[in-house]
Every structure is written in structure tokens, then in C-alpha cells.
Image 1 (cartoon, rainbow, N blue to C red):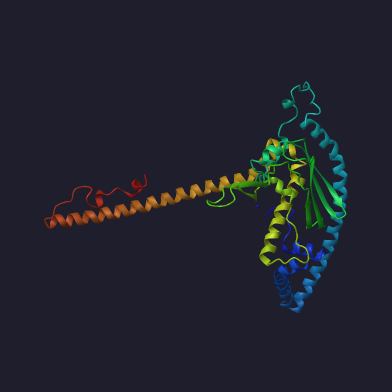
Image 2: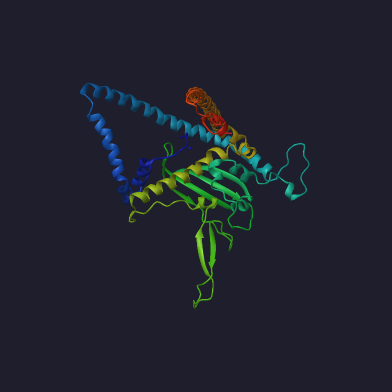
Length: 367
């Protein structure tokens, strides 16, 4: 689930790692990249001189296009920065209403704390998005109820963007703000270099990313105390501990490199979803309207396919019924001839139900 998401591929990851000279991971992907490059060069070498000259002209056109596209990205960045500033007063008003700091016109200020603002606003908005809903466990919901606001901002050195999650005082962790920063080699492609998250200061026994298992000691063991074991568990808050790119001296094989790439893609997908969808359209995600707009068309397509499948099944059943009727008529005709022949030979007609004529037609067997 491909769309216009800001994903990156193996080549993008390799480029990002080359910038940091992480040779081990690059070497792990080297064979794949060389195979791809070899196929491209083989195509050019297989062309006739005349066709090759035309392709060279097309490549020059492509270069001109890429130059214009680079200018487009530059101007778009300026335009986005301009409107990002214009959005801020609206985000501030949204924050104040959601957290009960101001009351909307026509309502008296709420006296009860529980009636202020819009409870669970960000939790519900995030759960209505399929990408984020998969990351939020039932255990996470208690902590995410304390989420007051989410912001994002551009980072210039190195290029990228930062997400900031503002939490009210809670019983899970000490941090009032959790951040996630994405460093990009090329922000427009995009090519991800690495991601950095806040280290969460969990209160004792409150970590949502780990669970403590206690096992009874084996019989006859000298140690009578329970054996304690800590395990990682699925949680949205793992988002703040992103996958780490190996250092230059670390060895990593091809399978590990591919797994790392998948983890980084998933991590970036979550971050870009929060930046591009949740923050600017939080109200629509809270009400479910954004989910309907985004996933409604997919459901309608599935329903149409199901209806088409049902119609095809009905047509197949009708064809089968017609064929069965024809077979029954032929069978009855044959039986009549056989019965006539038996009577001529002095035989006795079989009782109904003992022969083919007494069998139920196939359509009755399906009922």
C-alpha cells in the first residue's frame, strides 16, 4: 500500500550510506546495484548507432527537464515555508480549543476539568489512520491520552525535519516533549541518512516498550528467587528508538542490510504520515472524515469487485443448471429407451428412487 508516499529504495539507502562512508553496508548491497547498472549499460550498448544518437538526444531533453525540476523544488520549498508560517496561528487556536485553554463562542467556560477541551483528540486522530493504528497498542493508549500537541519543523543543517510531541504530566514518563528528527541527504527525493529519537525517561515499571517476565526457578535449584527476564514488546513509543545504521567497522550481511532498509522505510513512512497528514488535517482524522476520503474509494472498489464476482458466480450457476437440465433430459430419454427394452424382454420396472430416474437432480443436492 504504491502511492505518492515519500519512500526510498535500495539505491537511495546506498547513496545515503556512501555520504557517511559506511563501507560495510554499501558492500553488502554492491552486487545488486552493479547488476542493475550492468543491465542499463547493456541496453545502451545493444542499440544501433542511429538509435543510440536519438537516445542521446532524449537524454539531453531529460537533463533539461531535471534542471527545471530542481528549480521547482527550490521554489516549492520557499512557498511551503511561507505558508507554514501562515498555518501557525491556526494551529495555535486548535491547540487552545483541544486542551481547553479557551472556549468556543457560544459556550460557557467548563467548570469540570473532564469537560474541558476535546478529550483524546490526538489519540483518536492517530488511530483513525491505518499506518499509525498498526503501531498503537492497547497499552499505549493510556499514555497517548496525555498527548497535547504535535508539531513539525524543517531542519537545515543537516537538511530534514523534526517532529515534536508535547505531553501533559503523566504517570508513564518524565519527558514533557518527545522528538524525532530525520536527517536527509536530499530532502526532495528524499534520501534518508538517519533518524534520531528522544530517549524516554520511563518511571519504574511503566515502560511501554518492554515487559518484565518472571519465571519460577527450576526444582532443586539453589536460587529460590524468581528469574526475571526483560523482553521488547510492540509499542508506538518504539518510534522514538529508530533503527540504527551500522558504523563503518560493523559487519553486516546482505539479509541484514535488506531488513535494515525495510525498517527504515517503515520508520520514515510513520514520520511522514504524521507530518503530511495528521498534523495539518488532525480535525478531519479525529472525526474520521479524512479516513473516509482516503480509504473510502478503496472500499468501494472492493465492493464493486465483490458484486462482479457474485454476478459471475450466478452466471456460472445458471450455466451449470442449464447443462445439468440437458444431461437430465438425455438421461431420462436413455432410461425410457432402456425401460422399454426391458419390458419387451419381460423385465420388471424398478421402483422410483432405485434407479437414475429416482435420483434427485444436482441442484437439489446443493440445497
